[in-house]
Image 1 (cartoon, rainbow, N blue to C red):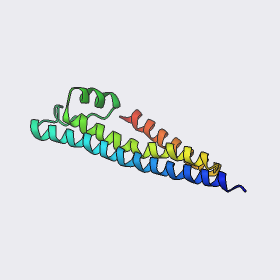
Image 2 (cartoon, rainbow, N blue to C red; image 1 turned 45 degrees about the vertical axis):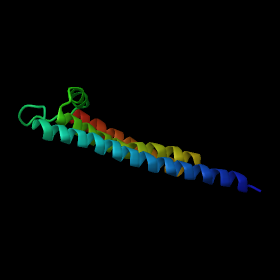
Image 3 (cartoon, rainbow, N blue to C red; image 1 turned 90 degrees about the horizontal axis):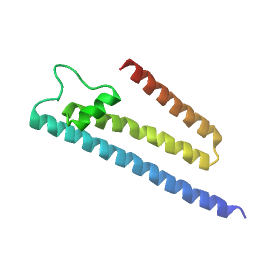
Length: 127
């Protein structure tokens, strides 16, 4: 009698899992492409785009360097995108667990997201 809602929920969970898989694949492909472009610019120009041992570490420096086509900044942007890919996966997982009405995992995954955000903020404050 209640099989139709369960079947509908299972189909929805399968589609969410497919979306999560696509997010991870597309995130890795985009990140690798950005890093490859930065590496190619580094090989072609032979310069990082910055003087000495300076490397862009803040978000503003990375974006400004990317706009100016500095190879080091472009590679850092690719690494930044690679770091954001699993964060996006955690966000989609929260939605997925919420749709399953599995509130324990919604709380646990939300806590993981909170820890990630705090760690990023700590990293930004020390950059």
